[in-house]
Length: 227
Length: 279
Image (cartoon, rainbow over all chains, first blue to last red; front, side):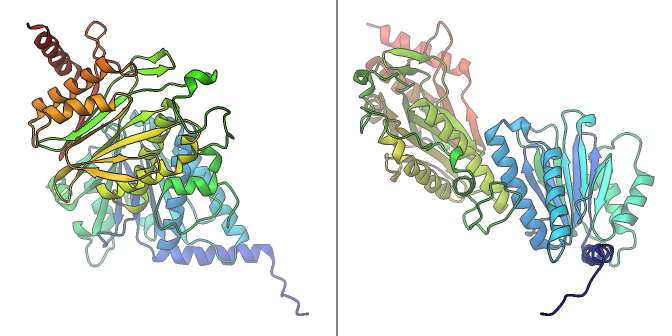
């Protein structure tokens, strides 16, 4: 019988983390930013039909960076979880916090037990009834979970984007047009060729809407906001 | 086949993006068709409960739908009965199911409300998973499957008969679908009414329905049909001007679904009553 080579757990985890990070670094970035009436999502996504940002429940939105097939599966699992929970209890009982915990456990298990870790980073946001009630969560490939305020980003260039936005972001949440402008500027740093507005996927969790708060912003509306 | 109940544990490639399907594989105990076993003396007929000595469940209704100028109208009375008792005076039997569709239900109240709730989740679930809403036809078909799945309950007397209306954005017209207890789906271009007072409402509609009625006329006809049904059928409640209980009327058109407000309904009811009192 052939004996497998001994690999120390540290080495194994390090290899997996490196593998996952390499996959995510290739992915395009996504920003979630609080604006005065909700949460704005902007993704660098040239496709007009394959979405990276999606509605999960009434006030919760999801986006994923990295390998499409993997975060698409996670998105579907999230919608199933949310709809089932909403049916079993009430619509208000579906929270981003419990979804983020679910994703974290799932990714954590996959990272430590499966052959190949998931090459994804997730961003989960819930718009509150007041600006203080907003929640932003960033979930890493290993199940690490970070609770963010005001602005967060995932994907390949997330570090550079976040450094820029943390510096430029005003003290109180900006209005929608200003928030969108900031996101667009952030995507332009070091981008060659320049990111065009058509290449951005934009969606909102709009507090002023009743019922389902999620809404996509078309390019025509976005250019109107920026002019 | 995966037996773990947590939706986070495994994925499946589900071709129909259906929440109902998902529940039936993952958590069948949450479906309305609970495994109750047969109730003695309840075989086949929903009318038996009066003589069987079993407690009655909320029942009775008139709901109707017909096409009008801009789309389709759907309306229902507000009464629920338990045997010879009135169980509720302000029950809602007409539900908006998504932006461009609504349904009304007749039958046993509990399973009716549950089906409407589940159908709304079903449509929303599909829209979120697939990225775009079902077509009008697709929604109607999906509801047919849910009625069909309810058949074991029908054998125990818990009948649920829906009416479904939707605005077909592709064709630019309002459509209406009726169902039988086996889940058979039939499209009607004019009007239909179901429930214990359904026949009476249909008689009124037969006389007063015209194709392409303007909105105000359409609401008039709906109220007239429901009032007539209430006069003929114990299970149907008429408009109550004193306590301000009016039928629920929803209009489904290219702009979406909206309710006809109570003040408009009050005026129409007043007109109808004074019209009747004239010699």
